[in-house]
Image 1 (cartoon, rainbow over the protein chains, first blue to last red):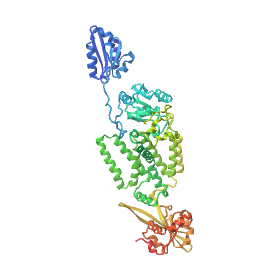
Image 2 (cartoon, rainbow over the protein chains, first blue to last red):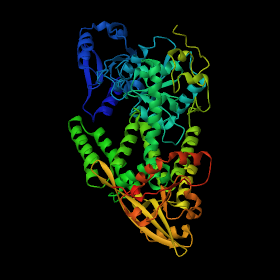
Image 3 (cartoon, each protein chain N blue to C red):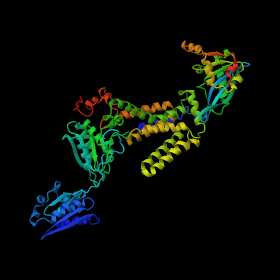
Image 4 (cartoon, rainbow over the protein chains, first blue to last red):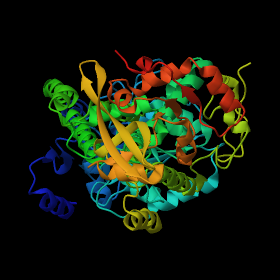
Length: 467
Length: 170
């Protein structure tokens, strides 16, 4: 044991946060090794050191029974390093014993920040894997909820949990996910989004994996037969497979009256289309297809453009890019300086640019409509996809007019049609069309529409009924 | 993915910007006056230049004159006098001195325009009367207009104006 201790001391000698403690019992000595920052000092002092010092000599050979602790294990020499880094205290006696004494290094469960809802629970995932798993387990109290645990990352040794409902899940899907995860060999997984690279099959701007901070959303997805991937130290949980229509749904849709939800969902679809097409349409109409709009409107557009020195595309680009800059700075800024950003941005972009004659007022309206429409979606990935396609459409519209937009639309939809998430078509249930699934796709007639699960995801389709 | 990138690139590079026009560089013609002198058509294109003022849009006008054996040629000739691109698709009304010229008006105009017969062409054209005012006048004769369209006649609705003072807006 002394040789092993020397080895450990050599390993940890450079950093100062590893603690080696020696406790003597007459001729016998036991050694304690732990990391100061990863373990809770209260726990170490009160429960372990106190008990150890009061220990009788003759019990030394039988520590496992005299230091009872729920999370206490006998481990091998090779495992010692891992356990120290997990926040365990290692006791080197006759055998090697690890006792859990993790320090609380997270912020606890806090309120939802990015995916707000009006009704519905307000708790969000945090950085602690066990807390996150607990939040889901508290919602689904069934032994069918499986949380397979693996570790990925040579240095970080991050715990990854694959969550699914054993009685619902399509085993084929599960196999795909586990296979893709085992292929990862990297030194570090810092956040759940690191796994995206491996799980997304396509090169596309559109997200084929949802990431969410809402435990209720994850629970819903699990009950539908989807897979959730939880990563330690990441407050976002990945849900897959994902369909495009999932981005038009929010958890709030299930907490409010269904009839109102249909309206909101149609608004969201409109917003999606408007976010992509509004600037392009404006550009097409003011550079190519003048006969498309009534003369009065054309004259009023011309009156506004008269003093603007730039071509319409440049004008639109200036506005879009300054909007993106504004948004980015607003995200990165702390909330104290954030108000300065919004005042500056609002004043300069909104008013001064117009009165200086650089930008026409109508362009501000157009860009603002498309930008606000884009912000309807809480998913930053979808917003980025929308942004790319907005620029593509803008360029096509200035070169080919409405024909360009038509061409772009065809490309966009064939592209979306080609996409899949874990082999499931992205545009489902519209392409391929499923009549029965329409009850909870774009319109929602009543909550009873959710009696059955998605046939693409599972064969165990019946969920039950409300009445 | 390569194809997706390549296809628009090819399209953009090979086609350039067909028909690309900036709104600023465009002369929107709203009214065309046609006269005939010594067997040669004299065409005047009236451009409406909207000017933005506080809370409303007012208009200024500019005139381009041209002549030719046919109306088409005359319009082309007039277009050459302008530094801007002449935009003719939104022409709202024609002022002609003789109903005979009707037949000569290019077919592309015959969808929605209104024809006025006037004697003193230049005077009517150069007054501040805008296309809306003229069209409103025609609305009084909507019956004839509607009838023409209902019957599917290709004839342009034709309005004879007896009092020219009517066309001149105060």
